Image (tube, rainbow, N blue to C red; front, side, top):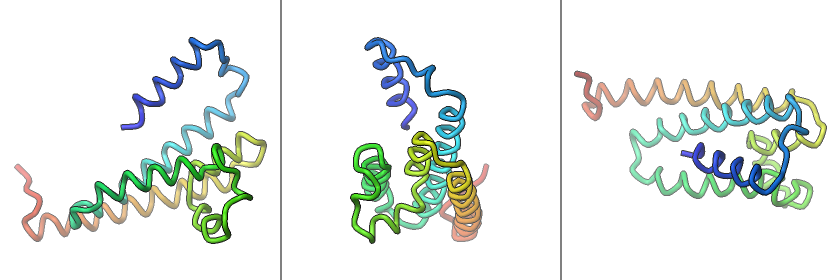
Length: 138
């Protein structure tokens, strides 16, 4: 769902004369890695949506949180301690930190964490949905 927004931003940046080429391959790798981490988080939400109807509205709030507190809009050091602690699992924050010159290690760890959690949660929820009759295979 975010792909049209990313494409619109890239077109806007291009039309306004901003060159993204100066960011280098590290920025592209960090962006793809963060996107994979957000995909894993989305897989976790998909797993939860098989059981709970309210996940759709929660997803919107979570997306807002991930973007606003990624460090792009509000610097991480300005956040309260509780949000800074929670933000250690935000792949977008680690991508911004890579853009600022920090290493890939934490971004890779958070991405692997969300992909594993999402995969396990989805497999469990899918199995539950088939057993309970909420999901059908043809």
